[in-house]
Length: 180
Image 1 (cartoon, rainbow, N blue to C red):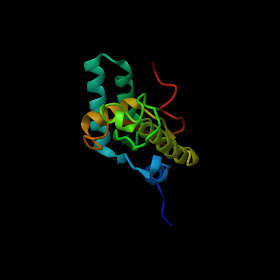
Image 2 (cartoon, one colour; image 1 turned 90 degrees about the vertical axis):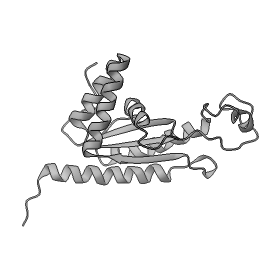
Image 3 (cartoon, rainbow, N blue to C red; image 1 turned 135 degrees about the vertical axis):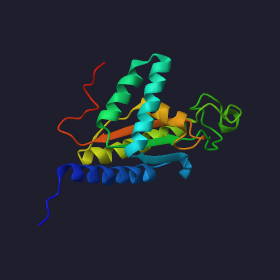
Image 4 (cartoon, rainbow, N blue to C red; image 1 turned 120 degrees about the vertical axis):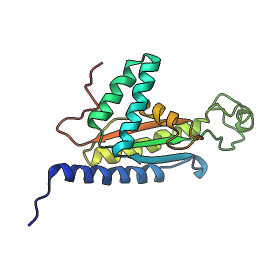
Protein backbone atom coordinates (compact mmCIF):
# COMPACT_ATOMS: atom_id res chain seq x y z
CA UNK A 1 0.00 0.00 0.00
CA UNK A 2 1.30 3.44 -0.93
CA UNK A 3 0.80 6.68 0.90
CA UNK A 4 -0.44 9.49 -1.31
CA UNK A 5 0.52 12.94 -0.10
CA UNK A 6 -2.37 15.43 -0.11
CA UNK A 7 -0.24 18.16 -1.70
CA UNK A 8 0.57 15.92 -4.68
CA UNK A 9 -3.05 14.87 -4.93
CA UNK A 10 -4.24 18.49 -4.97
CA UNK A 11 -1.79 19.48 -7.71
CA UNK A 12 -2.80 16.51 -9.87
CA UNK A 13 -6.49 17.27 -9.31
CA UNK A 14 -6.02 20.93 -10.21
CA UNK A 15 -4.23 20.08 -13.45
CA UNK A 16 -6.94 17.56 -14.32
CA UNK A 17 -9.64 20.17 -13.71
CA UNK A 18 -7.70 22.82 -15.67
CA UNK A 19 -7.60 20.45 -18.65
CA UNK A 20 -11.33 19.81 -18.36
CA UNK A 21 -11.90 23.58 -18.15
CA UNK A 22 -10.08 23.99 -21.46
CA UNK A 23 -12.31 21.36 -23.07
CA UNK A 24 -15.46 22.96 -21.63
CA UNK A 25 -14.42 26.34 -23.02
CA UNK A 26 -13.53 24.87 -26.40
CA UNK A 27 -16.86 23.07 -26.77
CA UNK A 28 -18.94 26.06 -25.61
CA UNK A 29 -21.16 27.47 -28.37
CA UNK A 30 -19.59 30.01 -30.74
CA UNK A 31 -21.48 32.43 -33.02
CA UNK A 32 -21.90 30.90 -36.47
CA UNK A 33 -19.42 28.21 -35.36
CA UNK A 34 -16.52 30.62 -35.84
CA UNK A 35 -13.72 30.08 -33.35
CA UNK A 36 -11.85 33.20 -32.25
CA UNK A 37 -10.80 31.87 -28.85
CA UNK A 38 -7.44 30.58 -27.60
CA UNK A 39 -6.90 28.88 -24.24
CA UNK A 40 -3.77 27.87 -22.31
CA UNK A 41 -2.82 26.56 -18.88
CA UNK A 42 0.08 28.05 -16.92
CA UNK A 43 1.92 26.22 -14.15
CA UNK A 44 5.16 26.54 -12.21
CA UNK A 45 7.56 29.28 -13.27
CA UNK A 46 5.13 30.53 -15.92
CA UNK A 47 2.76 31.55 -13.12
CA UNK A 48 5.58 33.48 -11.45
CA UNK A 49 6.46 35.23 -14.73
CA UNK A 50 2.81 36.21 -15.12
CA UNK A 51 2.67 37.51 -11.54
CA UNK A 52 5.88 39.49 -12.09
CA UNK A 53 4.32 41.14 -15.13
CA UNK A 54 1.16 41.91 -13.13
CA UNK A 55 3.31 43.46 -10.40
CA UNK A 56 5.19 45.54 -12.98
CA UNK A 57 1.95 46.84 -14.46
CA UNK A 58 0.68 47.70 -10.99
CA UNK A 59 3.83 49.60 -10.10
CA UNK A 60 4.05 51.41 -13.44
CA UNK A 61 0.38 52.39 -13.43
CA UNK A 62 0.19 52.95 -9.65
CA UNK A 63 -2.67 50.44 -9.58
CA UNK A 64 -2.94 48.54 -6.30
CA UNK A 65 -5.36 45.98 -7.78
CA UNK A 66 -2.64 44.56 -10.03
CA UNK A 67 -0.19 44.49 -7.13
CA UNK A 68 -2.73 42.76 -4.85
CA UNK A 69 -3.67 40.22 -7.55
CA UNK A 70 -0.01 39.53 -8.37
CA UNK A 71 0.62 38.64 -4.74
CA UNK A 72 -2.53 36.54 -4.64
CA UNK A 73 -1.48 34.60 -7.74
CA UNK A 74 2.08 34.12 -6.46
CA UNK A 75 0.95 32.91 -3.05
CA UNK A 76 -2.03 30.76 -4.02
CA UNK A 77 -2.37 29.79 -7.70
CA UNK A 78 -1.38 26.22 -8.46
CA UNK A 79 -2.44 26.63 -12.10
CA UNK A 80 -3.85 29.48 -14.17
CA UNK A 81 -6.14 29.09 -17.17
CA UNK A 82 -5.91 31.99 -19.61
CA UNK A 83 -8.44 32.57 -22.33
CA UNK A 84 -8.78 35.26 -24.97
CA UNK A 85 -10.45 36.21 -28.20
CA UNK A 86 -9.41 37.78 -31.44
CA UNK A 87 -11.47 40.65 -32.79
CA UNK A 88 -13.17 39.35 -35.90
CA UNK A 89 -16.67 40.05 -37.14
CA UNK A 90 -18.91 37.10 -37.95
CA UNK A 91 -20.13 38.46 -41.28
CA UNK A 92 -23.75 39.31 -40.54
CA UNK A 93 -25.77 41.51 -42.90
CA UNK A 94 -28.03 42.76 -40.11
CA UNK A 95 -26.92 43.08 -36.49
CA UNK A 96 -25.75 46.37 -35.02
CA UNK A 97 -24.87 44.96 -31.58
CA UNK A 98 -21.38 46.47 -31.77
CA UNK A 99 -22.78 49.91 -32.60
CA UNK A 100 -22.23 49.73 -36.34
CA UNK A 101 -24.95 49.01 -38.91
CA UNK A 102 -23.49 45.66 -39.97
CA UNK A 103 -20.27 43.64 -40.04
CA UNK A 104 -18.96 45.28 -43.22
CA UNK A 105 -19.24 48.71 -41.55
CA UNK A 106 -17.65 47.37 -38.31
CA UNK A 107 -14.77 45.84 -40.30
CA UNK A 108 -13.65 49.37 -41.20
CA UNK A 109 -12.77 49.71 -37.48
CA UNK A 110 -10.81 46.49 -36.78
CA UNK A 111 -9.92 47.55 -33.23
CA UNK A 112 -13.60 47.62 -32.19
CA UNK A 113 -14.71 44.22 -30.81
CA UNK A 114 -17.54 42.32 -32.41
CA UNK A 115 -20.26 41.75 -29.80
CA UNK A 116 -20.16 38.05 -30.62
CA UNK A 117 -16.41 37.79 -29.87
CA UNK A 118 -16.91 39.07 -26.35
CA UNK A 119 -20.14 37.12 -25.90
CA UNK A 120 -18.50 33.89 -27.04
CA UNK A 121 -15.56 34.51 -24.70
CA UNK A 122 -17.93 35.09 -21.79
CA UNK A 123 -19.82 31.87 -22.51
CA UNK A 124 -16.54 29.94 -22.78
CA UNK A 125 -15.28 31.40 -19.49
CA UNK A 126 -18.58 30.56 -17.81
CA UNK A 127 -18.37 26.99 -19.06
CA UNK A 128 -14.79 26.70 -17.79
CA UNK A 129 -15.44 28.05 -14.30
CA UNK A 130 -18.52 25.84 -13.96
CA UNK A 131 -16.20 22.84 -14.35
CA UNK A 132 -13.94 24.21 -11.59
CA UNK A 133 -16.97 24.86 -9.38
CA UNK A 134 -18.34 21.35 -9.93
CA UNK A 135 -14.95 19.95 -8.90
CA UNK A 136 -14.78 22.30 -5.87
CA UNK A 137 -11.57 23.91 -7.12
CA UNK A 138 -11.13 27.49 -5.87
CA UNK A 139 -11.12 29.98 -8.75
CA UNK A 140 -11.87 33.54 -9.76
CA UNK A 141 -12.03 35.29 -13.12
CA UNK A 142 -9.42 38.08 -13.15
CA UNK A 143 -9.00 40.77 -15.76
CA UNK A 144 -5.64 41.70 -14.24
CA UNK A 145 -4.24 38.32 -15.24
CA UNK A 146 -5.63 38.88 -18.72
CA UNK A 147 -3.99 42.27 -19.10
CA UNK A 148 -0.61 40.80 -18.13
CA UNK A 149 -1.09 37.71 -20.32
CA UNK A 150 -1.98 39.97 -23.25
CA UNK A 151 1.09 42.13 -22.66
CA UNK A 152 3.22 38.96 -22.57
CA UNK A 153 1.45 37.68 -25.71
CA UNK A 154 0.93 34.32 -24.02
CA UNK A 155 -1.89 33.47 -26.43
CA UNK A 156 -0.30 35.25 -29.39
CA UNK A 157 -0.28 38.84 -30.59
CA UNK A 158 -3.73 38.63 -32.22
CA UNK A 159 -5.69 38.05 -29.00
CA UNK A 160 -7.16 41.39 -27.97
CA UNK A 161 -9.37 40.53 -24.99
CA UNK A 162 -7.91 38.14 -22.40
CA UNK A 163 -8.92 36.94 -18.92
CA UNK A 164 -7.27 34.61 -16.43
CA UNK A 165 -8.60 32.11 -13.95
CA UNK A 166 -6.26 31.15 -11.08
CA UNK A 167 -6.91 27.76 -9.49
CA UNK A 168 -6.24 26.54 -5.98
CA UNK A 169 -7.41 23.85 -3.57
CA UNK A 170 -7.19 25.08 0.00
CA UNK A 171 -9.37 25.25 3.09
CA UNK A 172 -10.71 28.65 1.98
CA UNK A 173 -10.84 30.22 -1.45
CA UNK A 174 -7.80 32.56 -1.47
CA UNK A 175 -9.17 34.57 -4.39
CA UNK A 176 -12.05 36.09 -2.39
CA UNK A 177 -12.15 38.23 0.75
CA UNK A 178 -8.80 39.72 -0.21
CA UNK A 179 -7.13 42.83 1.12
CA UNK A 180 -8.31 45.92 -0.68
